[in-house]
Length: 382
Image 1 (cartoon, rainbow, N blue to C red):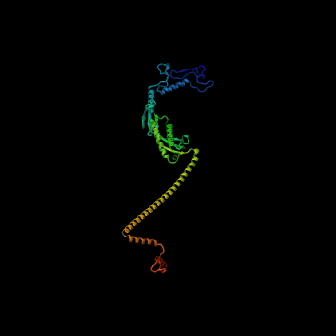
Image 2: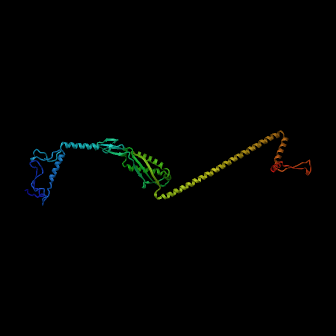
Image 3: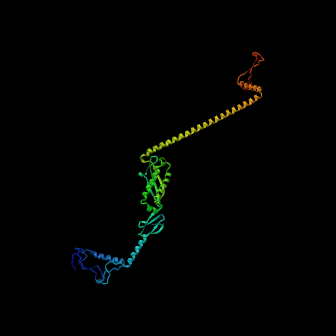
């Protein structure tokens, strides 16, 4: 029986080592591995566990297992871990496989890649399979056709803008963009999203500052949207940012919430004013048109009267000249004719009494017989 050397489990005094058959881990003594004070199961020693682990590692790495040492230690293999040629080849192949896996990469149709040589520009990867020898060359892949959206305004103070007529308007709009030139996008923009937001907000404020409030709220949104898109793209192109503006969505343009009720009352009053002004303009146009027509009529009547009087005067003058010429030829005859015609005009509208001097006295008065009246009376009695 082996003596008790006072090991931690009461069995630490036995002799360990390989036997005459080259087996390791044997113990000389029967008391090792037991807990003091009972017959419980034996617990392996730490050295034994380490030896078994080393043996399994040698097997995995191509070494021989089983016998760690020959009897007496002559001509045997070392008890430490051994690495064979197969293990080294396997490790080299694994390293090559990892390197190839890390160096080759694939770029989809909607993507572009940027290759970096120690952080500096090396090349641009095209669609399909690409090669970047890792770790000297690294790559970054970007989705160039993906549409990114920047919401500006949306209830924040950045949507409050001052118009050209010194009013405040609350604007919400979206900027939709993608990557147009991946090389410029990577190397010229440190923070793409904040830069695009700042440029878009600045461009919108510039446009609103030279516009009045009413057109912004009513009819000029399409014009503002087109001008805003062009201004943002021009500014980003000047930065060589590689950003392409796909479209701009002008969502909302309203007065600030604090004054929107008063603003609506003002808008209603302006609409009433416009209505009344249009009615007044229509009445004015009607009255002016009627007055112009009356004036034109009076002018035409005056022109007609003038022509009539002139023509009549010219006719009278021509008649007088003709009479004068005849008077110059036969003064007595002409004088008698003028007398008769004058008396005819004078006596045509008065009652006439004919006196016959040959009859003498009152009996010589011959009443004028109005034949025209007699004809009309006789015709009425029939």
